[in-house]
Image (tube, rainbow, N blue to C red; front, side):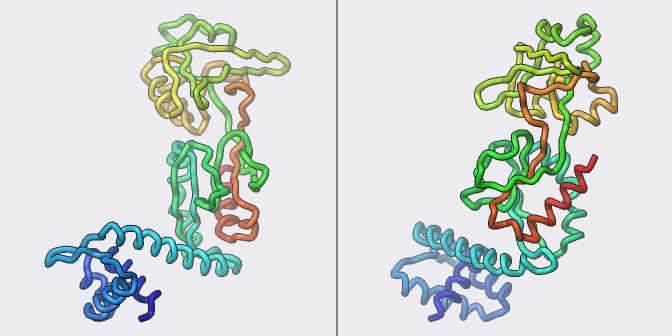
Length: 299
């Protein structure tokens, strides 16, 4: 028995949810698929599939074996792609991790253009605002906002910069006394982004004048879009990335406050960075996506 081929028949059967469906997909006889899966079970001394006249399901042993088999096939695909990925054109799957709202609003609308430009590539994307560790090999490339890199073992490639804007709804600003100086923010309902378990003071700078304000308010969250929605509803003043609220400001749903001051939470960095492991320096896939982001984020 060719165990590798039998493993392929087994995973195809699970994916297709039946022997006949797997055989049709592979273009071989159903009896060939069944025979190889039966031989695999005999060699392993374990039942991998529960069979009935209507469906097949994985046994507990089958579920464990299927997970490991998929890992093997994915590793093989990755090994083949890594060789092809050193050629002239990027080839294979690129595993990405993007910040949730930045990925959805800034990157996602343009992914069709990227894939049309690189038809031999596939993208596998997770969206997370956590600083996921690239060192475990889950991702080929991660886009992060703010502080460049959490580890000296990662390559950090700057892609661009963004601004943070203080914004509030016209309705909120109408209900409150006009703001003349940043220190007045201490008397307003400030909607604060939470970093870990704490919200940082707001830092406003104009020329040589720096104001560090321990603002307060009725709401804080680690989700920037939630703060945006609250600001739109007139709940208070929020400090948010320009790419998140630019359309709302242009439409008049939000207004900028102290637009002539540079604002940030604490001494937070305003850079947009691509992070990857050193062994991906020569990857055509990684470099293609970096070039795409640099073009997308160009001033």
